[in-house]
Image (cartoon, rainbow, N blue to C red; front, side, top):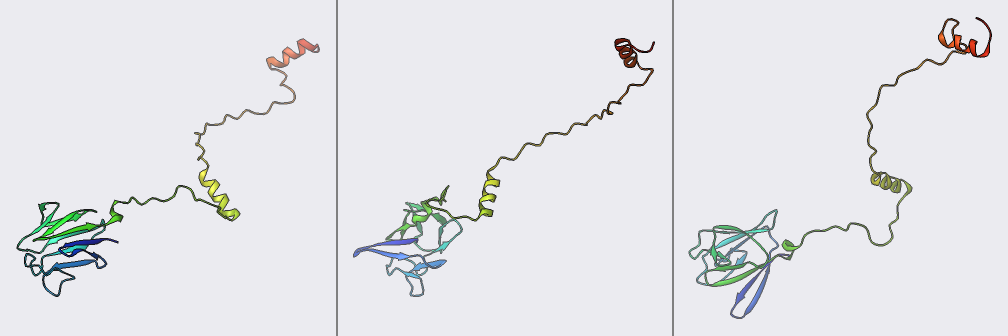
Length: 164
C-alpha cells in the first residue's frame, strides 16, 4: 500500500493513500490536512495512475518540490522526498519497485485430468515443419507380357529361345 510519511517536529506520521485522489493543504476540506502556515489552503493533489501515483501543484504559494526540484506535475517513485512549504514528506510505494513475477513452474504436486495432461503435452510438442508437396509422377503398372513388337520382347525371345 502506498503511503506518505509526514515528517513533523513530534516525529513521523504515516498517511496511507487509499483514495484515488488525495488533496493536501491547510483547510479542513483536504484529505490530508497540514496545519502549517507555509502550506497553501489547497496546496497539491496526489492521484493514482495506471503506473503508480503523480503529484500536481494546485497553484500553491510555495510550490511542490520533489527531490529538491520544483514541479507543476510529476510521477512519484518509491522514496521520493516531497517538500511542501516547510513540511517534508516521503512517498513510499513498495509495489512500484517490485517486478511482478509469476512462477515458471508450479511447486509441489499438481493434479490434472487426462485431458489437461494431453493438452499440456500437445502444447509442448514442436510444430512439424510442413514440406512442400512435389507432383507425383504416375507410372503405369507393368503389363504381364510385353507386347510382341517391342525391343524387350525380342530380347527375351532371343535369351530364352523361341520365335525368330
